[in-house]
Image (tube, rainbow, N blue to C red; front, side):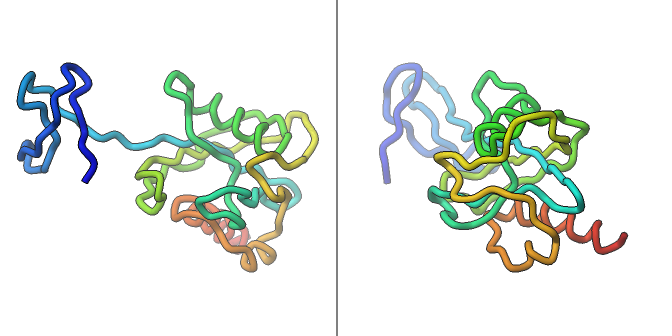
Length: 168
């Protein structure tokens, strides 16, 4: 197990039971390490009954498909992060029209987190890939069934969209 040290005094942290959980705490100054969830934001963009998806170029889930999304910067508003990630990954500029979903994920090897997805409409830009994407495009629900999807949160939100389309 990797040694973890106190951010305040540098002492090696030790396990304690606090709040009915195992925690890492500093025996010298009492500082307690509370792990935090990663926060990601992205968009659900639909045009002509097709959904914008990105095929990952990098691990984890290299080659799998997901909504345009990514980690937020520590000082970034989630809506701004969703707009930024969409542009970085697809070349499209978008306008947020509302909150779509908030979903917790526990299957990412980089750590557990929360995915915030907004509904959006295209406001500019040209569809193109990036260093992080192998392919980008709009896909009908029938086509999506053939694609391997990345991560439980993305899969759940994409499946909800498909279910909505099948009801109409």
